[in-house]
Amino acid sequence: MTEIKSESGGRVIVSSEILAIIAGKAALEVEGVTGIGGYFPGTVKNKTMRKHMPKGVAIAVEDENVKVAVAIKVQMGTKLHEVSKEVQNRIKAAVETMTGLVVTEVNVRVAAIAPEKRKE
Image 1 (cartoon, one colour):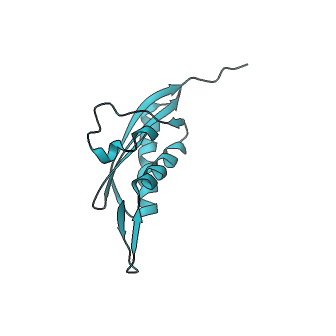
Image 2 (cartoon, one colour):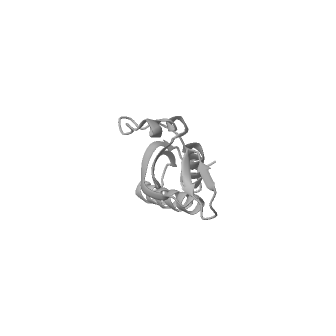
Image 3 (cartoon, helix red, strand yellow):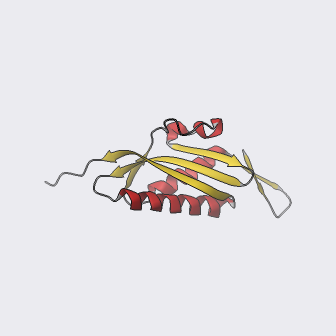
């Protein structure tokens, strides 16, 4: 759970699962991304981040800083570097806008390539 400072004097608590959902939805909105899922071999040592790995999104929160790792499936024929950069930008913007937290890292792993649709 992550507590977000509220200016009204109350408390706002957001679970890591919600942050993962926000990040995953933002990634899926990028043209060329066909899905999310996969694992992060040897790169995620933080237990909190490992918690969300089956969903393809890993989240680590320290104070008001968020680190995100996402595994994506990309459509064949797209430019991987452009899709990955756009995924980073969308996730950062979505999490920061919706929560007020600061996203310090968004690591993208291309876990799979979806085949091109056959022309009939």
